[in-house]
Each structure stands twice: as structure tokens, then as C-alpha cells.
Length: 152
Image (tube, rainbow, N blue to C red; front, side, top):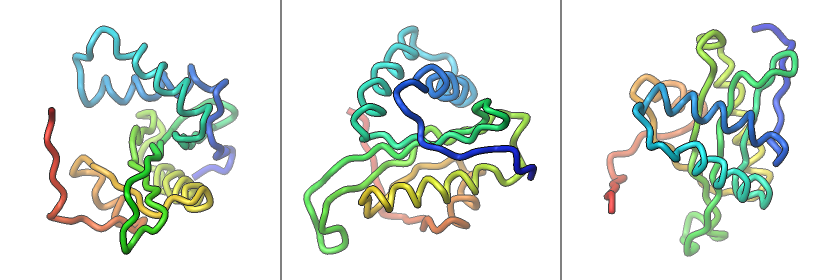
């Protein structure tokens, strides 16, 4: 991979770029989208980028965002594994199509997890498309059979 890229955490002024990457990802995996999807994403990011409860890693090549991933930070009751109760959900993992297949996302995710660790996050949860599971496992995620979800 070429080395003319940078990794950094998104800041509130990156709202438009982060929103554009999120919307591109959603259009690939969930089209058609609700009419007000973009406004909902912007509302979330405006709040959570500013207060640090969304750590969004951006990979830029020659100053242009080409990939991103987010750690959406939450807190739960402490348990025997996580005394702080701080955890994150990995979300919006996306690389623009022409930059895929070059190892960029693995590098971005490893970097983002370091940022999360530095921010005191003790556990990270992720849902993944089947094709992404090997990548997640390479960086240390463990596939479990005990997670469940309900849509209310």
C-alpha cells in the first residue's frame, strides 16, 4: 500500500465527510434508505463527535477521506471483566470501492482500537457481514455464539 495516507480521529468540522462515507456505506448495504436518514446521521455525529462518545477514524489519502470506522462509546453496569463499564460498538466500517483490497481497513481498525484503548474503552462489540469476519478475527475479535438481539 502506498504511504501517502494519514490516519486521524474525525473532529466536528469533519461532519460532512464522515456523513458522506456513512451514507455511501448505507446505500451499499441497506438501500432503499428512509428519506430522513442523512439528517439522522448528521444529528448523531454533531452530538457525539463533539462530546467524544463517537471515535471516528478517518483514513485520508492526499487529504481526501477514503475510509472510516467508528467506535460508538457507551457505558453499562461494571462486571467482572469490565470494571469501568465502558464499552464501544464498532460501526460504519467502510472503504470507498476503489481503495478496497489493499489492507487499508485492517490498518485503520488496528489504529482505531488503539485510540479506543487509550480512551479507556475495555470491550468492543461488532456485528459483521460474513465477508468481514476474517478481517475482524485477524485483529483480535472473537466470534461468539451467545450474542442475541431483538428489534423493538
